[in-house]
Length: 224
Image (cartoon, rainbow, N blue to C red):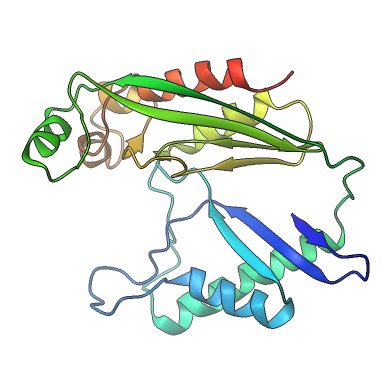
């Protein structure tokens, strides 16, 4: 999505894309923003103004799989993503209205993972996490464009289910927004340990009720 001035110059753009920035795997010790670095370089060279990368739902182990990474590959892939974003707005539709609507709701998620409670009790996580944890979900719209937040790394399934709730487009699902409550997974990940990476993913989740509660809450927030 892009905002332009009356002369057609870029004021701001944002790209919503779901993929862990992990071309630079654990064998690299340098600090890096991975492919997002190449993305920003390419967009900032092409457009002035403010350009934003907004992460999507990446909680089902959504990450690059095309071979071992390198600084060069990460930057190249980021530049390729930026090129796709530039091409997308050139063929996209213009919003007919620009009215802004906003709504939010504070919710409590049950916490089944004892590790989260212990980290809170020790002060490693500086917030109250006991049998439940309090967070917030947001829905807002700019004209027909709709946005919904997920307070962690949600499995793609919940991204698709969220978009189904939105009757107009374009539709954006903003992962790791308003909060960072670990992986948010389908209940089957907790019930079937044979699912790839299920043991690790569930160990980083507050519990299996989180995903369904997000969808239930967004059903209340999203304007029909």
